[in-house]
Image (cartoon, rainbow, N blue to C red; front, top):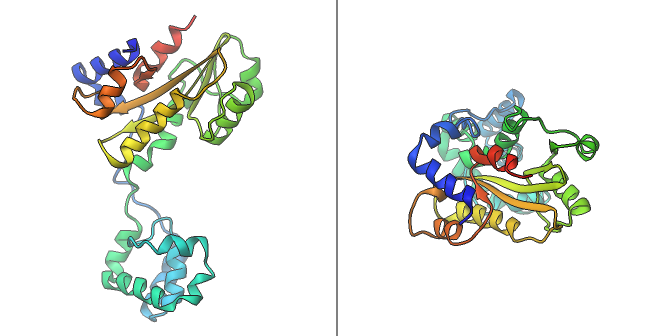
Length: 260
């Protein structure tokens, strides 16, 4: 087992792990989604006038469709299908009308699921200079001596790794840094539960570790959450029976400064 994985397990089981982790992932589950006033006025008007086509078109403009229906994504990708499938539109809007306007508004402004808030939170934490420096643009990063962190979206970081570090996985990255002549690349994830999507998130990070890259590149998985709870479950077995660079974000600074 990797030293920093072992240290992460000890941290999660022996100390105020979650209290400390809130500095990295300050989740706000009660922050409701905002709806443009004019868009909501259009929804109210079409709802009142029983204009299902206009109601559906307006609801499609929302980031969160108020009901779960497997046909909705098809219309998002192919809006021309709306006029061709009136029975489906009427069926979906019938379910929407059953909610009533008050419940409909609540559904449309429902807070984001916590696992969907994670993406920017890790980068925000980096931007605060927690690791000793703030992320910089590509030119500054390439010219920097000592320790530096590369700024950018997950796609731009992946492009940099592909172009400069021999990392060819067609998937974004959350973290690229360098310490003297060594590069560190990785993904950061908060694993909030066992099973389903969370297992997929875990496997995604492990795949990053197994993707080939140049010899001067260390691949890491910056993982937090339930995977460090001692158990016989797959995630815990994986990190404890293999020498993988898996670690909590809270130990990332220690890891970086352990690199010569």
